[in-house]
Structure formats: C-alpha cells, structure tokens
Image (cartoon, rainbow, N blue to C red; front, side, top):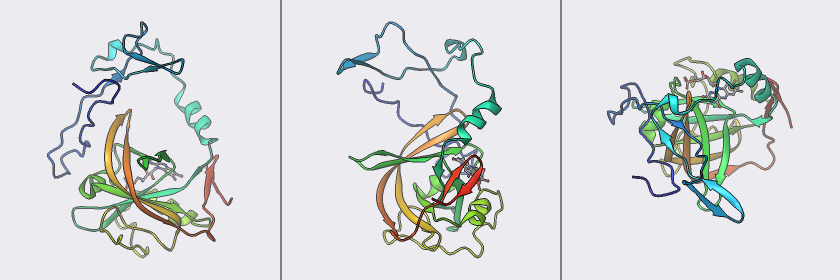
Length: 224
Ligand SMILES: Cc1cc2nc3c(=O)[nH]c(=O)nc-3n(C[C@H](O)[C@H](O)[C@H](O)COP(=O)(O)O)c2cc1C
C-alpha cells in the first residue's frame, strides 16, 4: 500500500523484453476522481486530491467527452517550448537519443526535471540501462540536428559530437549544440497514456550564457 497522498511505486519501464531487469508490460491504470472527498486533504482552503488508481476501464467513464485528436495536436502545437535532445547509453555503450519538447522543471528542493517519452521510443531501453538521461537544450540554429534526432535512424549519432559526463552518470552531453544541459538520474517513472513520464534527480548541468536556446512553436523552429 502506498503512503497516503503519494503516487503508487513506479513500475519498471515497459521495454518489451529489451531491458535487463526483466520488466514486463504493466496493465494500464486509470485515474478516478473521487466525488465525496474521502481521498482528499484540505490545505490552505484547497482540496488536494490523492490519486486513486483502478484497473477497470469502466470506472473511468468520460462519456466520450474527449477532445478530437487532431484538435488536441493543433492546440498543443501553439504552446512554445524549447527543443531538447534526451540522451542515454544503450547496453552496447553507444549513445541513443531523441528530440523532445515535453521537458520541464519539476522541483527545486530536491532539484527534479521531467521528460515525457512515447512508449514506442527506441531510446527508452537506453534510459533504463543508463538509469538516467541527459537533457540537452538545443541552441538556436540546430534545426537539422533536432530533425535528425526525431528520426528512428540507428546511426543518428554518426558524425555528432558528444561527451561523457565527468561522473559517468546520465547520458551523452552535446556540448557543441546545446545552450544548456541537465544530467539526471532516474528517480521515478509514471505511465501516462501512450507515454512514460521520466522524473529525474538533476545531479549536474551546465549552460553557455552567450548561446541562445531554440524555440519550437506551431510546428516551426524559431530563434528567441
Ligand atoms: C519538435 C519535436 C518534439 C518532439 N517531442 C517529443 C516528446 O516530447 N516526446 C516524445 O516521445 N517524442 C517527441 N518527438 C518525437 C520523437 O523525437 C521521435 O518519435 C523519434 O523518432 C523517437 O526516436 P527514438 O525511437 O530513437 O527514441 C518530438 C519530435 C519533434 C520534431
């Protein structure tokens, strides 16, 4: 039983047999809002709902009131984000990575950051193998790199400069292409729809004040 008010212990990543931990697919869980507030605490006048997970789809009936998927994408495309390459090492010791816009800070004390990665990403087993990742926040003008890292090519790191962190933790640092980077060790994984939310303890990082980060909005890369 998880402590009150906490998320259930994170399941291991579903790596479809590619990982080393023997992780198995976990049945999807749905969140159910509790009407009578038996699972809520009052805090400064606000009801803070604890999350209740159930395994039954029937217990989560939205009556079909979900946004049209294309409209969802069009709405979300308006949200300006940075462009991040999340990197890690595969079991062969070689770099893996993908372009993400779903990256953000979570907490200062302790310092936490999250990235949302699709379940079909080839980088996930590498994140699990590394037990962490590095978030490389791309500099302006790195559209080509962002596009390359958004492919499924197995050789996408060929000809790309990268370096190991001093500690050996986290994934490859793309010093020549990043305005900043955050080195993370895996703290928690949360299954969310067709993605995994990877929450990392941020253990190190760096930034180049003279280098501007790149922005992605309305499906275009833009300088700041
Ligand atoms: C601008 C941009 C943002 C993206 N954001 C995400 C994201 O937040 N999460 C994700 O899983 N994929 C995202 N993608 C798609 C992945 O980069 C793409 O599916 C990639 O091929 C996955 O590579 P992998 O299977 O080698 O990990 C994004 C792509 C682009 C171009």
